[in-house]
Structures are given as structure tokens and as C-alpha cells.
Length: 140
Length: 140
Image (tube, rainbow over all chains, first blue to last red):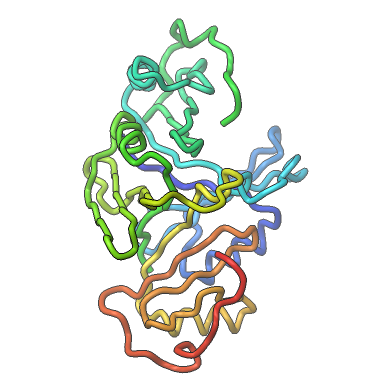
């Protein structure tokens, strides 16, 4: 397992980038998704590219951001085998809120409802049951 | 500047440690504070001690945890000179919510109210004005 980032949603991308740069972080990666109409910007301390904060900016705004809770997004970790990890979590009673239908991404929640993103390290795995046909449960 | 941790508050410390260990993280450090009646537990992925999640457990419970927002705590970074960094932030219009009165710790908030902890790297600096006598502003 490998730590990837802590994600926060931002309303004003330029103001947010300016703020995190002022803190001392550097922009390490940027990803514009025209189809999904969102931009991801990763900023990390100099010499620590593995410890970024990920800013998520939705071009059309975030629907329903009633409290701070929606601004904090999640903790993200890469895992060696996303199916094995989800099976292990499920066996221990953890709900797989967003099953890894695509062999690539899953979401669970901590006992305090902190959203945790699990990503397959490297390429996505081939689709596999029971995950491929499993629906979502709740929010994450 | 150096990334330190992402902090989340937990209601049930044992259940939370079990959850994060199940994910694959290892406990790297634990700090019990009898006076403050709280426990901090750091858990990080194997080989990534610099990327921990910090669990904060208040022995007497957290007063008023009305929403998820209070469960997410903050992003924490160490800085070389906490006075210089706070002066730079303030000059740029950032409110220093918790000034570094003790030469050791300050809190600010991002444009989206994400709480950011700044800690002096190494030993605390000697008290220095205007910080030493500056009161708190708002919450963080």
C-alpha cells in the first residue's frame, strides 16, 4: 500500500493554488478533464512529491456544499491488488461503498465516515465478479 | 516546508486503529497526553513513515461533532521559520487564526476553510512580537 494524496475540493482554483503556493508547496501535476469538466491540481512540498494535496475543481461548481465536510474529500492509497484488499475489508465487515467494478478504484469509509479511496497500483485489473456487477452502497 | 500528516478525529480509537491497519497501514508512533486527556496515533503505509494519518482521540469525547466536518482535522506542515511564514501569509491577506505565540504552532485556513497546521521544524523559537501577544481569530 502506498499513500497517494489528501484531496480537498476548491471553489476558486486560482485562489487555492495561490494559497498553497504561498504556504510553500509546489505544483507537481495538473490534469484537466474536458469530458468530466473538472481539473485536478497536485501540490507538494519541495522534495516530497509523494505527499501532495490534491485540489479538485469542478468547472460547474459543486452541487450542495452545505458544510466543510464536502470540502474535505478523502485520503487516497494505492494497493497491490484492489480485489484482494476489498475482499479482506468486506470479510472484516467494512462496506465497499464504491466496489472496484473497473478493477481500478474503490471507496470505503472509516468508522468516522472519513472517505478512503483505494486505487489499483499500476494498470487496472481485468473485470472480475462479484465486483463487476456490484452496485454502490451509500455515499463516500 | 515538510508535510507532516493529515489529521482526523476518531470516536473509537481501537476500532479506528483496526480499520487503518486492515487497510494496510502500520502504527508508527503513539502519544498519550494525560494532562490534555488525549491520545494521538500515527499510522503510515509500510516504507512511507513520512505520510501518516494522525488519529486524534479525546478521552472524554469531542464536544459538538455535528457533522463530518469536525472529523476531518487538518493538513500539517513543518516550516523552517514559523514567524517568517506567518508574516508572509499575513502580508498576503491570510488570517493567522492561531498565531504562533509559543514559537511553535500556528493555524490558518485555506480559501475553502480547510484547516492548516504549521509547526516550527525542530525546537520552538523564542517568543517574539507581534505574535507573542496576538489573540486568536475565529476557529480552525
